Every structure is written in C-alpha cells, then in structure tokens.
Image 1 (cartoon, rainbow, N blue to C red):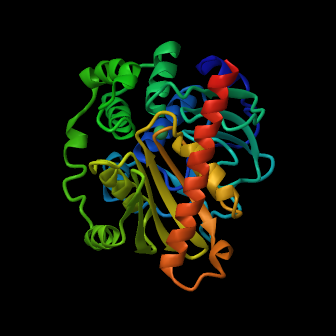
Image 2: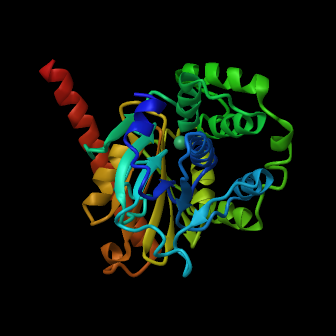
Length: 340
Ligand SMILES: [Mn+2]
C-alpha cells in the first residue's frame, strides 16, 4: 500500500473524482484536498466532489480561507457530471455508507479510517481504523512518496487531525499525535487562527434548549429529540456535549428531517460499539446507521413511525430499538467470552 500503488490503479484516460462524505467535515476536506494535490503532481486531474449542504461555519471558513475548489454534485449544473465511465476514489468514508451518495462511476479506491463494514472490492483499498483521522493517513502517503507538503497543506491536515481526534484528547491517538507534531512544525498556523471564532449559530442555542427539555436518561443512556430540521453538525455537537454529562455513557440524539429522523450517537463504553448498535437498531425498522466505536450516525425513514401520533411515542420506540441493540451487544460479548 502507498501512493505509488494508488496511482498504479488509476486509468489516465478516464475521468477521476475524489468523493467526500455528506456533509464533508474538515478531516475529509483536508484529506481530499491534499490527496488531489498529490495526484495533480503526477499529471492527473482529479476533481473533488460532494453532495449536500456544508452548514458548519468553521468548515465554510476553512474552505473560503484556503480557496479550495470543491464541486457540489446535487445541483442542476453538476448533477450529470460524474458518468459511468469515470473513476472514483472515496476518502474518509466507504461506498455504500449511509452518508455517501452513490455515484454512477467505478469506485476504484478507498482511503478511510472508519471500520470496514463489508468487503467492497476496490482495486486499491486502505482502510485502517487505528487512525484517529484520515488526514494522518494522507500525511503518511505524502511522507512515503517523498512529496513535500506546503505550509498550507500541513495546516489543513493539522486542522483535520484536531477535529477528528477531539483535539488529540485520547491516548489511543498516539500515532496521530506524532503526525500532528511533525505537521505542526511546518504548518502555516496563521490561516487557521481565525477559523472558529464566530462559530456559535443562533439555531444552536434553540437546539440546545429544546434538547435539554426533551432529555430522557435511562440506564446511563441519554436520549434527546432536538426538534425539526437540525443540521447534522448541530446534532453531532449536541451529542458531544451530552456525553459529558455525569452518569451518561451512551448518547442518542435525533432530529426530524424531510425523509425521516437523523441520528447522532456517542458511546464511552468500548464494548458498546456505537456504529454497530446504530446499524442493528435502525435496520430493524428499515433505517440505516454506522460509524466508529465512540461515534456514529444514522437515519430512520418516516414510514417507520407512520403509526405514531406524537414525538413522545417516537421517543419510546427509539428507546426500545436502542435498548434491544444494546442488550444484543451484551449477549454477543458474553457468548464470545464463553466460547473462548
Ligand atoms: Mn475522518
């Protein structure tokens, strides 16, 4: 595995796209931008693509301050941009993830730090969940290929690592921390200094108030309905805040959207894999979920709650789904222990 092998699977005569998840976050953007620059240095012409709206102010500021070109595909002009003949590299995510819009091209490569959910047969695959950030993996690609990162590229990767590792707050991120230190020395930190200064949105305040009003804690699991049409980023921030509550080790927050309910999930217990629990709980009612051990997301379609008349009943069904999945996870672990 490495940059040369990745370049080796790319057909220079066909279109090339680097796809980010929906909505792209700083780690995903940093990874895509630096990888794109590296591919350009090999004479390739990749275009970075995504779908959905980027709402988080810090992310918008990051894109603007760096002047990077990202192409949004779900617009009238661009919706037919990617064709079945094109090649796609997915970064910081995997094809068929619930937050990855399926494009008509051929998924030739994947570079990701999320757990591999199932075998996807890419021509080139580098999936290493031991990394806290995909940006750290991209740093290794650059270092391995002898590609010299510019101060701006280094700053971008520094920011990606910081965001995905929660400011390097956990010991398990030792490798990311080493890479962070290496990048930090040459990064142009000035371009990062203004990002995040104006990061509180008025809608976040109302979301927080609503979420605390609707908070239910059962068996150390916090459940909260944050209202209608909340940005995924707001839900994620809220979940991060609720997990810090005393006596809470698992968080499920959700918001109603046009096609159902969006979820953000956090776990502080290593045996309760947030991604697996989300997947199992939501699949039962025709939804989808997935993610890391400590953080996950998902969607339940509207139809799953069609028979319910109010949000209180929806919450009760959500609690049942999550509790069942948590109990199953306990049994799985128990069985594993017994079979050893
Ligand atoms: Mn990431």
